[in-house]
Length: 456
Image 1 (cartoon, rainbow, N blue to C red):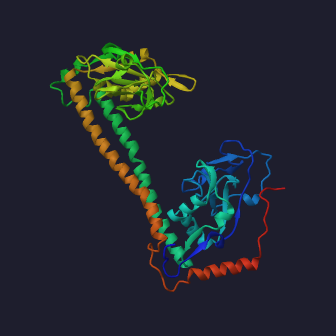
Image 2: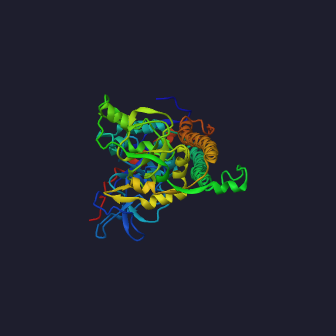
Image 3: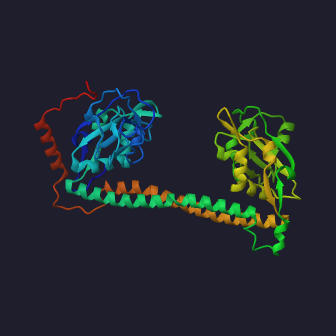
């Protein structure tokens, strides 16, 4: 164990609690209870740092429950079961509007009020989280459990009672500022997305380059066109099922294609002969469209292949298109199919079957768009690439700021439980004295009776 500040000591969780309460394991309706209905909380209600009463399921109206299992503001809840990364999540309930009750997988820790926030934060600290994971059991990492006995034996650092309050106050105020920072950062990503959409809309309507044109009559060079009228070739990919034979040819997954980007690291393998590989390989300026996807937003998206890829083929849920470069730039077509007005057309063409959404090559060919001169297309592509590069830099800075914000909480907790967050006061009663009083109180009360977790 690491050395603790003066007046601190290590304590088992069982020394700081009056008891542990568990709830029911009964069949429920898999929906959030309405106001006036009763429900059991799911483990996801306590997983993400704050109590989320929407993560609950509805009890049947005739189910009997012990009213003492009702969840109240101020309860310290703990998930005894979850994945290895999430088992042992703890929250203090701020507010609860629904009639919710403990489930068998969500425990209530009866902690002395003065130490409740301290215990809550200790359970979130890296060292205690590691101890919880090591104490959990189960044959699969996807579902681990920690027993009440092992939970009671968890060791946490304990500060003097007055210092616990000062530390918890400091953590509360700091995390409130961190949450505000996160909320502001979360609002930036949608703004960047809207910026990109506005750029694409302006690019394909003529607004982006209106100040660039030699004269106002240049806009008359814009004409309505369709994808089919500028195509040289359109071909679906290979329908054979990929395998994991690394001696085969790389074949893209459908997830490799997103609007404006192809991820050539997202592939499987397929054994094909050389003529087939040559027929379905990808070369610079090819366009790839998604023909099928489970999500509407990814159907009919388009991306340019920016360099030859002779060793990679594509599956039948993707479509390869080659356009007449004398008439249209592949980069301009990519911009067109990312623009809101084109996406609206594409989504109207999409049909659903067996949970998959798809678009035919015929419908893609009939998609309409405005086509300027090659010279103006070149300028449009240049400007869009420049503006998108600016958006990429903003996104990179945003991700860096979000990562820094995520690191603040564990760093704050680590500092708090090293005794470095607030000054120590030599006049504070040592934590050991608090433990003695708690032990004396438990002896005076005698061993608590184990109560039923459901009504008779």
